[in-house]
Length: 171
Image 1: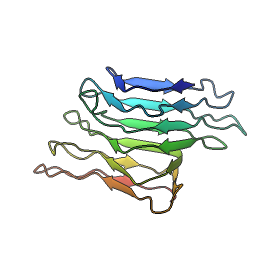
Image 2: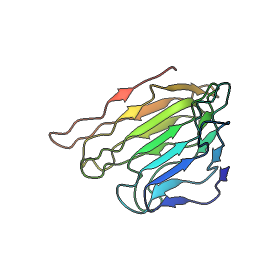
Image 3: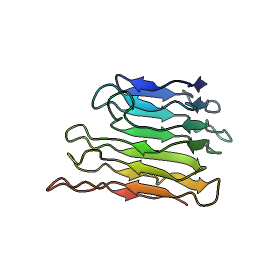
Image 4: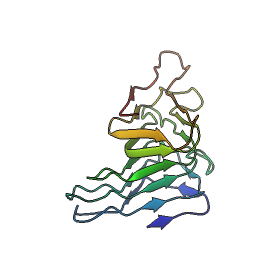
C-alpha cells in the first residue's frame, strides 16, 4: 500500500506495481490529497494494480490532481487496475500531461474509473506539440455524484499538428 500526503514529484520515469506474479489480489495505491507531477521533462508514470489470477481483485487507485506542481507535467500516465473484479480508480482531481518533443503526453486508464465531481483530462499544455491520446478502452467510467462531467481535451493550436486520438470504453 502506498499512501500519500504531500506533493509527489517524480524525477525519473516511475512504475508502481503492486502485484507481481499474478498470484494474488492487487495492492492499493492511495495518493490521497497529493498532487502528482515531475521535476524533469519526459517523465512517465505507470501505476499497475492489475492481476490475472482467477477470481482476484485489482487494487484500488486514488489520484488527486496530476499537473505541474513540481515544475513539469508528467509525459505519459498509465493506470491499470483490471482483474476478475476491477479495482476502483478514483479521480480526485483533473489530469494534465504534456509532450516531450515528439513523445505526446498520453493518458491510459483501465479498470473501474469513478469521479465524485467534474474532471478534465488534458494532454497538451502550451500548444507547442501534438496533443496526446486518451485511452479508456478498457475502462468503465462513472460518476458517484449527480452532475459530474468528464471533459477530454487533446487539442493543440500548433500549426501542422493534430489533436490526440480518444478511445472510449463504457460510460
